[in-house]
Length: 160
Ligand SMILES: [Fe+2]
Ligand SMILES: [Fe+2]
Image (tube, rainbow, N blue to C red; front, top):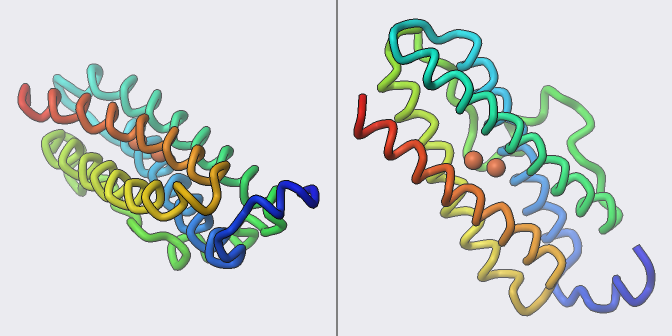
């Protein structure tokens, strides 16, 4: 990051990187949760849910990418040790349900992840609005996407 870019960050750099790392870990875990669930599910509605899970899984990976780029820009390192991902995350990881035909549980678990992300990113948007505009914008973009995701899953839940 250049000198001027560093100057405009008024927030504590270590703290910004720590928050970004949490979000980065959450996004990776959501990516994996949705992708694996898409492979695992069975049943009449599974074919409807699968493409949506795969699409959102890729969206979460793109979120992780944006966060990784901001972390590196700020002089930090994304989580290099894969086994540390869970410890660094805020929202954690929810494994696909034992019963691959329990699609209601699938949607409820995805909603939990999305809701946790919405609360977290909303806090981050408030936190960095005035102190780190670039980080603020990253979180704002993500927040907008997660709000749309939640809406999509709530519609599914109503139909199941
Ligand atoms: Fe995301
Ligand atoms: Fe999402």
